[in-house]
Length: 448
Image (cartoon, rainbow, N blue to C red; front, side, top):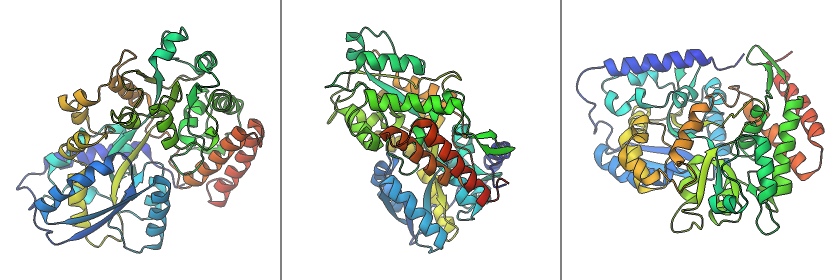
C-alpha cells in the first residue's frame, strides 16, 4: 500500500538531525551558484508576502535570483500538480501541504532532501537547524522514511469569539464541548448578528473538510475501520452523522447567509468586521483578523481550542513546506534557497515584516520580539497559549496519509456541502460518500 510509514518518517527525521549536526568543516560558499535563476510556485498564504520582501537580501548574498510565483491556494495546488505530473521543469521549487505529500512523493515528483543535509558544501547545520522544527511539522513533511520538504508553516484552527458579546449573554468562558458550543450559539445568535462562521466551500484542501474533521474526530468517528491495516471506509458511522449534524446546525441555524459557500477569506472578513460573534478557522489568520488598519474586533477577541465531542478535542493540523521538484534545473541552488527561506532567522524577519505567525520553529516561538508582537491577550485568554495547546493536541497525521487522500477529501467536501444546503440529509450524504470512497480505494488497489 502507498501509505506513510509514520514511525519510519519520525526516525529518519531524528537521524538526519543527528547527521546534520555532526557535519564539520567550512560553511558553504554563498556565491557558488551566482547567476542561477530559480522559479518557485505556491499559494499566497501568510508566509509568502513577507518572504518576497526578503528576496533581494537573498539575491545580494548569493547571486541567485528567485522568481516566486504565488496565487490563490486552490489554483496554486491545481497548477502545481499539473506541472509536476507533466514534468515540464518550469519550476525548481514547489510548495506542498502535508495532505498532498504522499501523492507527490509516490509519483516521484519531488526530490528527497536527505542527501543535501550531509553535504558540507551545501548545507550549514546551524542554518538548517533540523532539531529546531516542531517535530510534527517535520514528520508531516516526510514520506516513507525520507524528508521531502522543509516546513515553513504549522497550522491549526482556533475558536475566536467577541468577549463583550459573551459577557452580555452571560457566558463566562469559551465552550469546551460541541454541546456547549451549540448551546452558546443559540444564546448568542440574532437576526442581525449571526453566532458563528465556518468554511462551507468544499474546494481544495483549504475547504470545509479541514474544520469539519475536528467535529468528525471529536465525536469518535474514523475515516477507515483500522488505518492503515484495514482501509474499509466508515465515514457514515453514527458518530460521523452526529458530527455532520452538529456542523450543519451551527452553519445553517446560527451562521451568516451564504455560509455554505464560505472560504477562509469570507470567515476572516466576517470575524474581522465583527459581523459574527464566533469563528472557527486558522490560527495563522489571527494576524489578519486583528490587523489594526482593518480590524473592528482588535482588543475584544478571545481565543480557545476548538471544542470536542464524546472523544474530546481533536484540533486540525496541516503543515506546509518547500520542496525541490524532480525536474529542477538547479537542485543544489534550490536547496540553498530552501535552507535560507526556512531558517529561524528568515522566519523571524518575515514574522516582523508581515502578519506571518505560523512558524514551525521552536526558537521563533520562544523569541521575545515574536511574543511581543503576537501574544494577543485581551482578557479572553492568550492567543499563543491557545495556539500552542492546539498544536500539542493535534495529530501530525490529521489527514490519512494516502496518495488518494485528495480524491477522498474532495468527495467528503461534497457530502458536507450537500448536507449543508439541504440537497441531501446528513446520513444519505455520508452513505453515498462512503460508497464512492470505497470505489476510489478499490480502483487504486488499496482495497479489495
